[in-house]
Length: 331
Ligand SMILES: [Mn+2]
Image (spheres, rainbow, N blue to C red):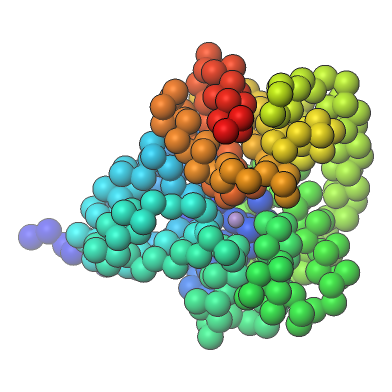
């Protein structure tokens, strides 16, 4: 006789690269306990694959990781397998997503919380607030700030509870600690733990000192972008070699004077460029949808929000990608 394995494991998969992902993971941990798996876009599906055969898995929460044309069907297929084993699954996100995929997820009875108008942490807070402490509202408000979504209906309501300056400095320090520790997964998990235990960013040892170092690096990046950025008719772009692309991309956007900025950095482990794209307030095109479409055509994957998105592009295709965006902006 085969002994039946008791299902007891609770897992949260969340985005590792920004405060919204880390905060979502912290809120899920406070509400339900369990383990956290932090992912980035290139590694997302690989990191989730072990869950397929994890017989102990009981509940799965997936937060702040957007889907794209390349991975959406694999994602649905994996969750279908888990649902067949009666694993409880919730997907909470705010990146642009094909309605067809939402329907497919709802059909297999995945709990889908999806609003492109509020950040993921605010939606996690709103969905599970009866299981969360007051401090969780503060963490969600900080995440809304870093995702440029503190002016939305739910986000602004949460921010109103707290002193604005206190939330701004906490959100910023948290962000610099996350961005500066991307190569230290254990630190990121420690951060999730501390926030889930209702610690404020300033209570985490050395967080402000670390943020100061990051700010200094950013000032150096600003000078480098100014010197090395290239400009096409409708966009500015630059390859970044010694920092993250997402830290430099706003400088590329701002200094280029164009409505779109692109920064990209080689990911040697995957043989691709990790690409960040940002749009100005005047940019009329939904960049997340555009990048999803172009990467599906030329290779790679990507997508996200209207004015902030990302992509993973095969190294040889980067010029083609930049030219395709430049032409699409012409229309
Ligand atoms: Mn987010």
